[in-house]
Image 1 (tube, rainbow, N blue to C red):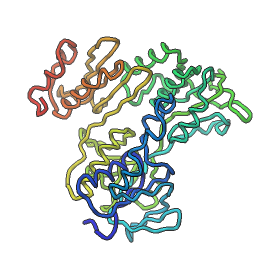
Image 2 (image 1 turned 90 degrees about the vertical axis):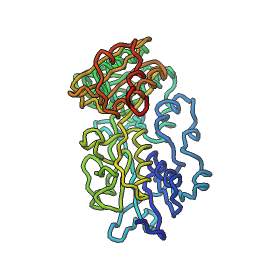
Image 3 (image 1 turned 90 degrees about the horizontal axis):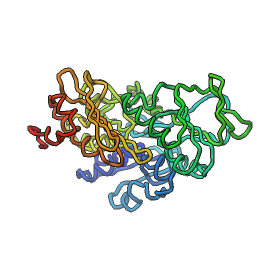
Image 4 (image 1 turned 45 degrees about the vertical axis):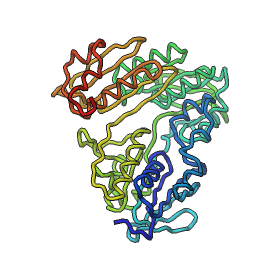
Length: 417
């Protein structure tokens, strides 16, 4: 039960936190609502940082999730540049870094994550960058000038998006990836190879199985020393090796934390009055029940909206499918579902070097789909695949493999047909 005299407090003003606040108002909550962020700016979206902001096609004020007027209109009290120091569960309150104490009726943790950093020699040299915030993006953008030699450490999505942007801006770019293929944790080998071919064709020097020993330089970075004895000279290093969830508040408060703040199907933590959403939470998959943590824009959106409903008393399981996209150069990729569940993998070639990959379990049910194509060409197919996954449809291999058979025809019998 929400105590009307005390607010719902949302800690974290990123995508998940803001979406939850707005959804609470959209769903009729008219009580006190407080949104707290530790960054000084208005809340903003992060996906443009590695692409449009670096390329200069989008200014920081075009990345905000609504302006100050929106929060005023919605009667959402927004505190920026404020850090929550402690949760006092025994009296349902939080302590801020300015000494204030605020009582809550329900608490939603949307504290996100922070970049993982390297600890090699030279890690503190000028010219070593990370990318998580608008300040990070603006500092890096100022350095990405034509002719600059850029080394990107990490062949995951953030690293590759930065590499594509830097190359487009006229930089000389080298990607150093420790693994045997690009984005291996998220992509099947076929799409890793597509990414590799694209980047190399556009002039990016991708070096796989390259392990960092040290960053060279005295005060400013001048190169990267690899464990195999090679040295890669550079002017700028961008480290993109993932993020770590900001779980410290939850740990100190005694909430269950494993690979994130553990929540149940309703996004409720081990304290019935506290919920968690977005990059920071570990939740049970709707398809398998196994716990997972997703660092995606879509997950933040969907969990924010679902948490709002749960906070207002709706007893529904979170059932959104995992979905992710990345844009690099003039190509995009999308992934829906959980490819690791697959027993069979079916490829459907598309025109203009595009490719769809379908993943089926042992019962021949579609459990995931990946797409690769120029521009937004695969978006419609992945959307149809999402419907088929949710419907747990049994589909013949031949129908999925044949590009002459429209995927829409496979929807017959589903509620979205």
